[in-house]
Amino acid sequence: MASAADQAQHDFWRPPMAAATAAISPERTATCRCGTEFIVSSLYCHACGAKRPDLTATRTLEIPGLMELASLGERLGLTMPAVVAFLLGGFCVIGALAVSVFFSARTVLDWQAIQLWRIEWLLGAVAAFGAGCLFKK
Image 1 (cartoon, rainbow, N blue to C red):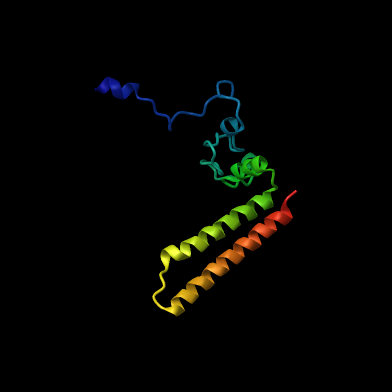
Image 2 (cartoon, rainbow, N blue to C red):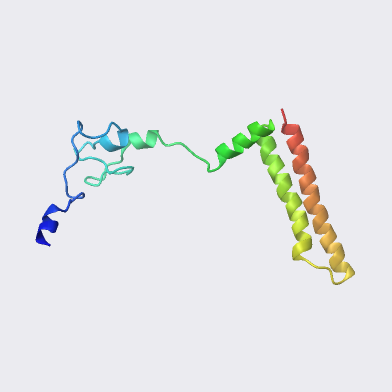
């Protein structure tokens, strides 16, 4: 059991890897001005607290699902605003159908309110589909 403890690797307490043995990657080989190596994908140095200069320049805004939405637009032959308007119109149609599932009419007044909500959802769908037609190529 004692021999197993001697063979254990102490990753945290090892000194940083030499630049020649490290993989060529700006995140792994970058060192701070104090000489310590940055921890992978950290924003600050763990020794002196200085801000990492090279990581802030490479950050970009990535919206999840944007590439799938763009590929859907390419397959349908639509621009991005037209695809968004199409999806919004579909959501409004689903909303108009969902009104009848979630609400039931017991009186004439309830029935009129439900019909008004359906009309509002369908008007939203017509407006979204109309906007999609205007944004089309």
